[in-house]
Image (cartoon, rainbow over all chains, first blue to last red):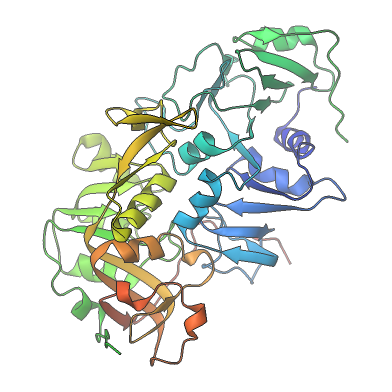
Length: 220
Length: 232
């Protein structure tokens, strides 16, 4: 069965490593924080200016001066720190953040990503996404494999305006885990539980590289 | 000590004119200079260019200026929470310049720091990079972004002293420090204004040299945009 959003987040959480600083985007990426593997320490950065972000506050303790980049009320954990926006993006641009997880509308086989603008629709703006994707060493995209019409979002080339070029390293969807090879192409690494290679092929418009038997994800 | 104290938001904003460029601190509705925004609305200033990460919501923050069509141009990174903004943008009444958030912050900082331009990888290969000088550093393409300054920068801090030194609280810091540096004239509204010497010099975020006028805001509504809580 294809993964739900929480399942995608659970699988991405397996990519976290001890002592990493991690920036989580809005949507599915935010859920990754709920599934940190036991025995490791990571700190979450939110680009509006906090490291050491904690869970949502208990009702009645919320503070208007304490929000994440999605403008949601949050808490801070012991060891947390606040900083201004230019320092925040110094952390990001300067590659002091080890992992960025963000959502996408489209990803292409050479690692381009589109996630900020649909022509003809209201443009909300790119926020911090362009800085994040241009700078991060390690970018994982969390997304659904296809859109609501069933059309692939894993493409040879993005059709929407780009957020960044040649930057995505790994994609985790409701169907599969894939990495993007230096010379192009999505290499299939894992299948969602019960999803066949054939189904993934059908849902992938970009170049899909299948090398040997593809294991099923292990998600508890 | 150079005393920067003014008595009110009205006094701080008295020389702001139609057509000026104004930076406003804040992220969403967090850390916005609510008292001065209300004065800009009341003064019915027109044709303003506003540099602010966001554009408020329909009935609060910069949304109040948008409702009265006082803004000619917005320079922002994300403007998605505002129906009136959308309407004015689609109808062409409002000019909008969307800038990656990190580039926006750094352009303000650079403006305040006397750095006219800098190279960043953000936006290369996208429409943000169109028409901008590209140069490769360490094998990676970067685009040239220019500094931003403003006739006025208006920031909001938690505590300040009469010398203009500022301390922010939580994530309400955000764009306030870089913008405080980039205003030809910078106005700071604070929740608590104290005498010089009452703030610990080790704990000040924005040195008073960047601030020309400071006052204690009459009231701070501090509205929450996305109240997300865990039930008791």
